[in-house]
Length: 271
Picture 1 (cartoon, rainbow, N blue to C red):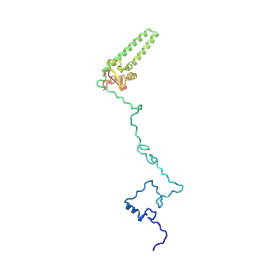
Picture 2: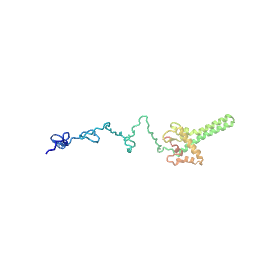
Picture 3: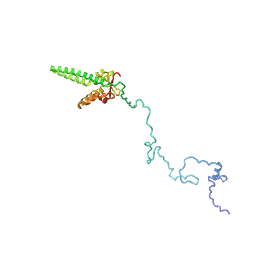
């Protein structure tokens, strides 16, 4: 006996369903015949939510559109995340410039080579002592002549003689102070030579290879030798003065103490 003729509910494969087709074939039959399942369509997927029986999402409520999705800018991290290794945000740091220095740009200063003594180049203690004695005799001769002039002029006992005596005394002082520095600062082949060093064929050279100028000459001869080891050394029974004169005897580079202070060497002039 058949049931009443009321409305029938659509079955899962009724008209309008995706499985309805000729012969009553369902999805399993289509997959069995073709041997493979149709690929899913590509494209943006809608967010999860309630769907209608036809498989489509319901439209949003009136006055409310789809919510846009915002992504953080590239290269940034949330505040709670620690910074990446290497320091800062924004990816790895670019390496520093390592190419050639452009013309006119900064250049690294070149180091000055230290003094290297060749065999037989250094002046011995005997030649240094001989040059010192010759220079001392030259200075004493100038002082003797000045003293004689002053005494002779003072015997006249007049104002002109007194003024001339003062002028001679000042000239003697200038000679004593400027004798060695001025001669050492001569240019050319005589640079680094006093009359005494010139007589024994030795010269003073700077360790950096630069010629001796007037300032270096005053520093070596007046400040270090005269004031430091002469005047100040006399307060200690001239012991520093004597050590300065004798130090080249046991120094491996034949240097006196004042040579170490001002970075100089005494070498043979013909080398």
